[in-house]
Length: 98
Image 1 (cartoon, rainbow, N blue to C red):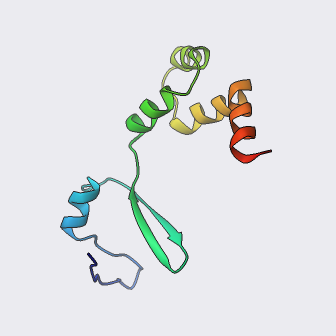
Image 2: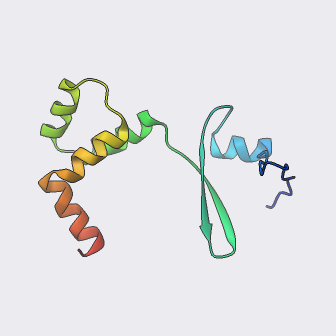
């Protein structure tokens, strides 16, 4: 299915309601635009809570306890800590053959 939308002078578009419903986004939610060749793919961006839940499955117990003791940390801070750990560095090496 395809949709035709208007582009404002400031470069904004409105996603049709059916697409917003399909992606599960409303109002202040954010989406990610990904360029693939001559096309653009729109993806729903995970909320911090959803992202942290996914991250929790791969972050080791020691890092989780450390983050919990430090109070509310952003998802990016937790990711940085994870990849600074030995387990995270090994995962990066495997993933990117570094």
